[in-house]
Amino acid sequence: MANIKSAKKRVLVTRTKTERNKAIRSGVKTEIKKVYAAIENGDKQAASEALKSATKKMAMAGSKGVYHKNTVSRKVSRMAAAVNQMA
Image 1 (cartoon, helix red, strand yellow):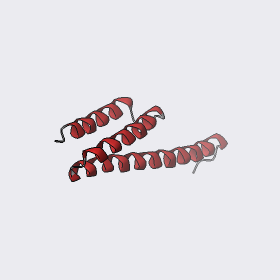
Image 2 (cartoon, one colour):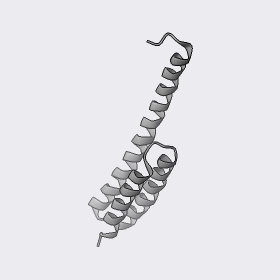
Image 3 (cartoon, one colour):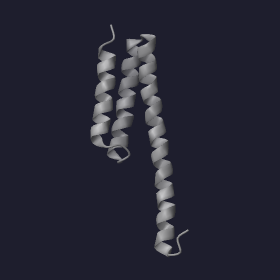
Image 4 (cartoon, helix red, strand yellow):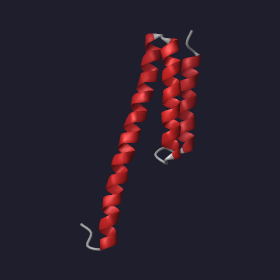
């Protein structure tokens, strides 16, 4: 455990930010699962709505620094391609 006051504060701040990032990542994963579940069910309407929601959530996570912008772009692109390939 840290003995210096500033190091103790960094431990607390890091813990807080880690919990926040975990919550955001969990929400993003849930949105991605909704998109792929709708694709599996063959419901294009639900898939496109889920894609819109997931895109927004991922963009927000990217802007907060939880994900790198290129990671967000890649994942959104793959989801959009999967939705567009539906018959």
